[in-house]
Length: 182
Image (cartoon, rainbow, N blue to C red; front, side, top):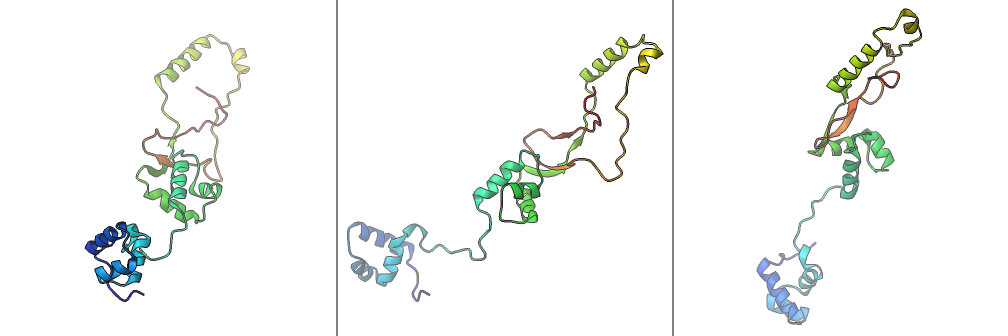
């Protein structure tokens, strides 16, 4: 532990000026009236002299790892747990969620369910119906309609929440059962 007071900013300037003139540390200490060890400590790294250490436990994640986590989450495809596992981060799932929630550009939200029919969709459907308006029962009997209601008894399908990057367009969760459709 240091016994004396730290060098004042004026004294620091004096030490640097004398050091630049190639004056010995012993002579600088005599002129500034501080110990040789104080001068030696200051000259070792003058930029960080007298800065207080924040103390406490150092963070497990580096700033680069945090940026990488945020960059991957902004793609909006993976949960915090999946990101943590794939990026091999040294933190828990909850800590990864906390880091993601501190970003002003990311928001944890639900995916929008299938969009409304667009005018283009409507025109295609009307065209399809007009083409088949004259069909008889025999032709309609050959058609298999596969867009029937699907009931989920074991919970929802797919990821309904995701980390949304606010500057980007939102993610849409399509609820089509059998693939295509208009």
